Length: 326
Image 1 (spheres, rainbow, N blue to C red):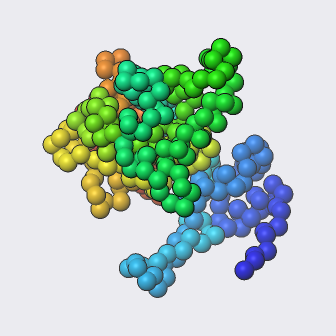
Image 2: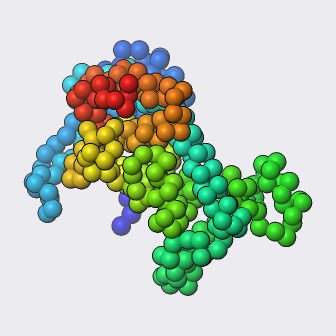
Image 3: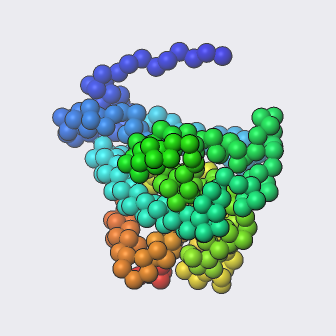
């Protein structure tokens, strides 16, 4: 089935359409400038929560189905949408800062642990988990082989000085893990971590508190999604993440005891992600990190509109008094 594409709308037409759907635009010149530099479609992610909801007959697997209408909730203003966009941008910058610290630390921990065993341990099945090195699917390749192909391609195309130096000096050799891990992105890192042995994953996970390697594996996969959202400048606030981080039972890691557990929708929201990031960043910088306090200060300025307030991002009542943010 084919659908006819929507027609092109000039910026003037876009403003007229938004006003027709109920958005309050007091300064059309300012709105025009924003639409020109940001784009209608990107901003649409930020006015999406302001669109009215129409409840319909129950879906087959749900109690009630709902549909977002084009009309905006009464008194929705363009300024409120833009303020939301700017707030989300500031949050993504902070999150990106934390992700950078975690990514670099994880690379170093993996390189130090496996490098001591064998500089080329990342290429050898006897240093990795059996499921990672066992042939699966129709390709006839192991997950490890598929991962190696991608990481070798990354290193071959890398233009960094360290990579060029190694390739020129050792043209017929594979780089040791402490060199090649420097070209890993979040996806490469998280997949490789999942392919490590249980013993090695647990060893690294313990660096961040009383958590298991399996839990850390889910954290890294979740953070990979968050990293992609930040890298592509998509909306981060009040969205549900496809991969939920696995949390330890209450009483095991006290800083996370206040978080919801399995079955609660809030576990897939931003607050849970920020909390596990705070645990990791605080473990990396034991006494001199202000990242958690900067996140707290910014989150306290979150939009007050109930449609996009902190509660929609999974922040529980009184969250700012939890030890993780003090």
